Length: 346
Ligand SMILES: NC(=O)c1ccc[n+]([C@@H]2O[C@H](COP(=O)([O-])OP(=O)(O)OC[C@H]3O[C@@H](n4cnc5c(N)ncnc54)[C@H](OP(=O)(O)O)[C@@H]3O)[C@@H](O)[C@H]2O)c1
Image (cartoon, rainbow, N blue to C red; front, top):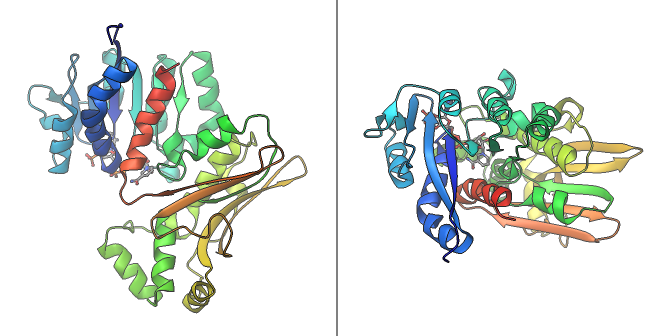
């Protein structure tokens, strides 16, 4: 290329399913991104729940991933591991972008993510996060904080895994009035509903979900529709410009779904899914999450067991839909790369 290489110093807080896959992506795609776009993505720091690792010249992302795949802490990274927290990294080293990938924690005020993100923005460090918690609970505060400090805030991975549902809605539909949004933004519920459609009882489907690691120890966040509602709130705020809160979403999870009804729907070529919907009403939107039969021919009717999707009904761009088949969390992890490139490329 011959042009100047721009260094992007990244701190990753949370190196679990997504964080360690993001490290693998950095290792694999780093050279290509440098030669194609002139950006050198350097992982200068990483933090998990047990400690940190820091190297100003860059950690080896493949080595970080390998440690985490073995269940070790980043603290054991040879020569760079130490005690400390993500906040310490932000306060003590030179950072261009924070990638925050700790668990959602809506019950505990989205901590520790919210504090870490506030600290980064206040220090003019750009923030990328797939963590819904801070965006659901503090969208407006964080957007304002980012603007005040000239920092960018990106959270593409918070809605529908690797599907660029937010970019599509907020960037590519600018100028439109969006009358209605329909989304299937949650994988777990679709997976369970398809097991029911295949003939399993509720008990069998939940057992299978646990065996295959699809269900969390506490599955209520998914099954009771909280996850889908949180994603709908993010779409409402960010795409529709409607200042929604989690409390106003009319929410019904899938636990009351009758397996016989799901099977009958499949026989008719229809699909049962937990549907998140925003419907224009007066000056605002009515937000609902509930299990629904999606008829054949509907843009979301072809979603498979690992599929998610979104449909935007607009006044001038027609009806636009997008879907993803996400077999493992790599596409979700890759949203952090997409967000970083969106910040740093013109
Ligand atoms: N998994 C997906 O498919 C997916 C898709 C889209 C969005 N997301 C979102 O992405 C985020 C990460 O998900 P995940 O599946 O990767 O979660 P995960 O596997 O549970 O990993 C969470 C990571 O955060 C670390 N952590 C926990 N508390 C911490 C603290 N106080 N300080 C620093 N690190 C801390 C954990 O440390 P240890 O390693 O020491 O336990 C772990 O590395 C979540 O907000 C999730 O909702 C996930």
